[in-house]
Image (cartoon, rainbow, N blue to C red; front, top):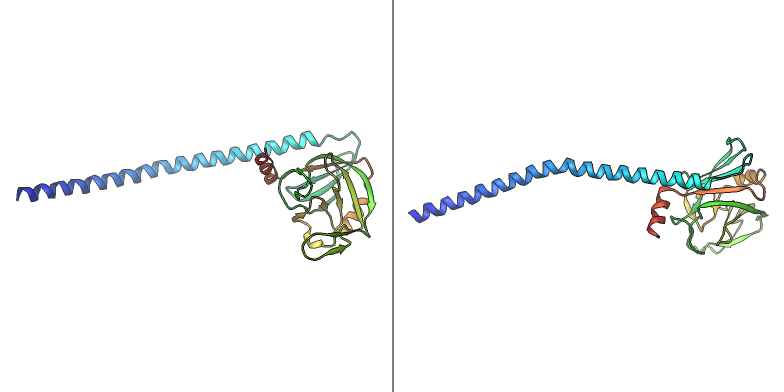
Length: 215
């Protein structure tokens, strides 16, 4: 009888101990949950602030143009091309397509659009140019649209702003590295640019993350 009472007593103590531990764990979770959420929010805010500062620094360092000069600014964040006059007023504002992979261009074939400060080296009639995108469709006529505005990009060749045979691609990241416009827009832009004009290509937040991962 004494043994039975002793076992029941121990069993009840074990249950009380388990219940107490469970309550303690639940209380601990309730206390830690807001702390963890606060930490994650702080980290997120810090990351966003850091990304914004990096983009701002890039813009400030790259967007150095001569006084009284028109220039082109291309944003991989907003997927737009803007032509500014000498007073900083927007003359043209077009949607674009750019490199399918994120980050600054590293090598030929990486499908990245270069980032930085460049200038126009020549404007070519591309109406008869063809290209094979290696998508199974073979050689495409008019792949570059009517005009190819070539950019001087140190370490890289064949980079430019041009038209397209596929207007539905505008607004997406789908190119091999060049910047695409609709044929109507590249024709309008061509009339307002000249050799030597500065072109600034700014990264998106995802490009900045990719660039940091490549270091």
